[in-house]
Image (cartoon, rainbow, N blue to C red):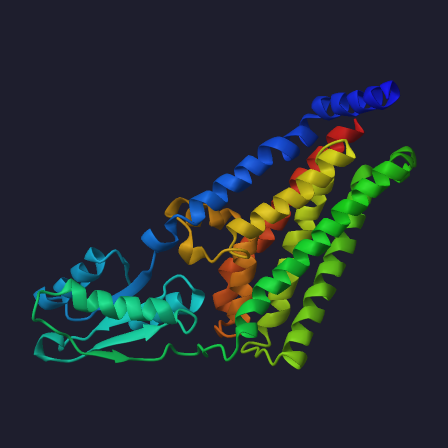
Length: 350
């Protein structure tokens, strides 16, 4: 019994001395719980719905409609033209496009185009239009489709963009685990002792992870198309989306593999970071139910941008040019991660 207690004491001392492992074991769960606790209380009392509004009338009547929307808790996003407003809906930046025609005061109906994935928000917007006006007043609302956006036929078309991102997260986690295995088996030490530059080893892992992520995303999307009938509206943009997503997560894997000197620190940091990015980026909980500060924080998660580009080439019908900003963000995440990972690897080799 004494020997068992001594061994247990030894392991506990090692855990306490390893600050990285201690952080992921004790502090990170508190962060995770805090984020989930911030999401669910806001699900009913703070639901942010953005409406892109094009006011072609610009008179007192139209101003009253816009003010009524804002007074009902909706976020009004003024757009210069119906084309720009439609693009914002297609990108997922707004839930709906409301066009107030020039002849609105004469009785012309409002034109409301809704993101096909946000049917509940559409009912809320129509109700807000009715509640925001003076008692006894009513307006005619005419539904109008958003150009080039096809409503998802099944839940699979909505779910597969996030599923592909989970596949990339799995690849990144697997390569990070391989880094841990190399440290445990001594392969990492032998590679450092060999006449090979540390950056060469690092970029070898980068290429391998990029290839694995690309193949994984391609297989998942082919299965989605063949087995589940998921439509791809922009076949030309699909390779661009896959390559950019793979480059992003390959770079993140390089960074995660360079963090920490122990198996516990590297393993904990890798999976915990990837899960945190997935949660904040909308792969676990929809962005629409998150509080405002968390939606702003989601901009720093590559998962959000990955889902955006994959939705863009499937049912949102975005062209390559329209996908370019989100793709640039993904590539930027990957490049910054590679540079940080290379700096850490160089410091470790000194």
